[in-house]
Amino acid sequence: MVLKRARRGIVPPFVVMDIMNAAIAREQAGDDILHLEIGQPATPAPSGVRAVAARALEADALGYTAATGIPHLRERIAAHYADRYGVAVDPRQVVVTTGSSGGFVLAFLAAFDAGDRVALAEPGYPAYRNMMMALGIEPVPLPLDHEDGYRLTSAHLDAVSGPLDGLIVASPANPTGTMLDRRALGELVTYCRDRGLRLISDEIYHGIAYSGPADTVLDLTDEAVIVNGFSKYFSMTGWRIGWLVAPEDLLRPIECLAQNLFISAPTLSQHAASAVFDSAAELDDNVARYARNRAVLLSGLHEAGFDRLAPADGAFYIYADIGGLGLDSDRLCDRLLTEAGIALAPGRDFDPRRGRDFVRLSFAGSTEDMREAIARLARWLGRDR
Image (cartoon, rainbow, N blue to C red; front, side, top):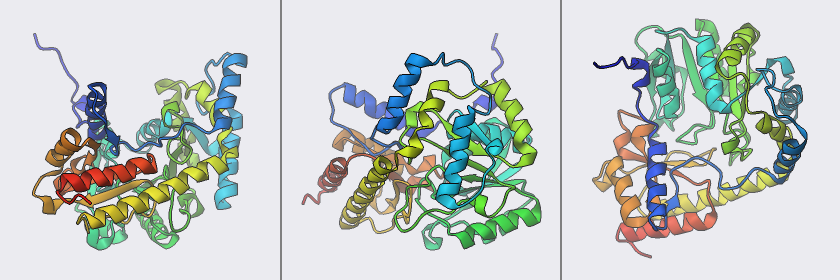
């Protein structure tokens, strides 16, 4: 007898995680691997965060919290918006989540029904698409390319056939690093408001930018759902702690969903995260290193003959066109891992239709690793300097 298996579980893998597993396996076999595949800081959480966590381990029972998070953390997150953006946020609007991933699940369930159609940039973060497919929501790709700078506009939405119920926008974006300025974000906000589309803004890479700070959609509308977290700029990836800023009409639905799906975000991580807003010096040192890494990779890739690169205005990725090499991205990533010890992410993870001609390089590691990666790549291409 064949037992039933839910269709919702048959979604594509998050290929980056598969690549990371393969890279770790080679490391365990004794290979020296440079990790440019995974989008996580190489640094630990700031020292103040770790100190608070140590005290909480000794002094707190670390039981469940309210589904929306401990009040002190919600207040600190709200204050962060006033400090960084000059935007007033009521702590009631803040929902602490199990990473930004848990935030997306809550946002998608609260905002959309099965069968709804939600537009998203392509290339883009693959988990948006895969999560929505698992929830019965139809992802509607908006193809972006090098010629338009991978910048989403209302013209891309106008080109969609059929109705839409929502839009996901990310600035800075993964994998391209593209940022949208206030005018561009305002155009999308207006488009969604005029057509009754629910806007979800992924702001997880805020704080990591190279030519000016990112703008928050919260400064333009109180109807969007804002998704953010502590993994990227705040260097707390494995702590699995994030947040939503939710509009009034979704607050109670999100709270009820959180109660039933997660009970609460990890309590230790909540206490620790409340200290991260006092760690700006350490965090900005990380961003300065990312900027150096970015310069190393951009220069080295250009010298190696890669001249079609996404803007990399923010975040810590370079999305590179490798179509001229005569290898699709899966084959290239496999060969670079086995022959050069460089782990990269294949483009099909981010763009199932055109990704075979692209790879993503993460520069969240050390500057020494970035220099070594360029040297190894040059040798592998037969252009040893």
